[in-house]
Amino acid sequence: MKIYNYINKVKKLDILLSKEIAQILLRQGVPFTKSQIEVVMYLYHHQDQVVYQRDLPDILGITRPMTNGLVKHLIQKNAVKLIEDSDDSRLKRIKLMPVVIAEY
Image (cartoon, rainbow, N blue to C red):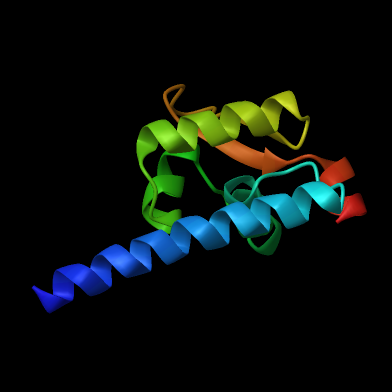
């Protein structure tokens, strides 16, 4: 019973912290959400590697639908682009746009 209470409290704390981080980012004019920043930072630190969209759920510990939504919004913000793999059209390489690398 005690473990359940701690899990609940940790989850509530995580939600509160995520909301606070979102507000701070918004006030500072950062155009990305916390989750989008996690994707951008991973791609930034792994520019020398090939990263496929399908790898992100395992890397970041998120679901596939969440990954698809994050990537879709990052594409709309011109932060990333998807590049079809020349050997397997089912694979989409995700790459940071130069403007994001230069600005951040």
